[in-house]
Image (cartoon, rainbow, N blue to C red):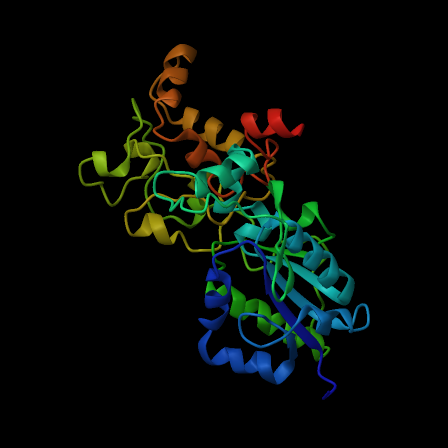
Length: 331
């Protein structure tokens, strides 16, 4: 023990991209090592849950928690780290919104298990499904059980700060680390609790250099169905669904700048209550018609409405889950 403030990072239901984004800050990762004692980071070091359990409550200064709440183990560790941490950051889209795993909320958990183990691509020799507990010669094995729906971190524990992105941009991570180090050294103050850090307050459209207000949409298409896009005009107003009007700024509009539509990985912009609802109104506003029926018809032509409006945000939206899951599990 060297007296440095303690740092932890944990992944729940996630792909590991957030850890890679942290490592992508390159030599600045040495600043983390210099400023903190890293006590728990399963992807980087050998540490056990019992090590965290033995720590005093509040003894970890900063925890970056990424990943959604898919199973009971995720929730258990979220509560444990919340108890042990002074500052808990909901880090990345999975923790803040549910992200891609949250689309599993469209279906009951048991249906997902049945599909994984009982489809034509599965070796059915043993007809075996996972069980929460299993006796083996070495003893009893227990595995985590899927929740009825995926949840965001703040739906389980109190969160101090939110850092969106799938994953967060590495330069934004570096800036936040610099701020935390200044706080430790008494040269800065933490932002107000509940703040979004490592991102902007506005929308991707405000970062995008493309020309807007053309409003010529008569139909929506997948990007591969459209002739080469005009590199100077708003992608949305060329008939390709682009989520920039509802998505938080902070990535410098990386996708629209290279000719790809924004898909919303930075989450809802400041003041957006429901991401999908804001997108629907934004899309309707650029349609070349004043007839409600025609506007509705064009909106209905969006190729993948659920994926378009809630690809990253279903678990954190007002809806939170699909109708079939809601009806079967009583949400």
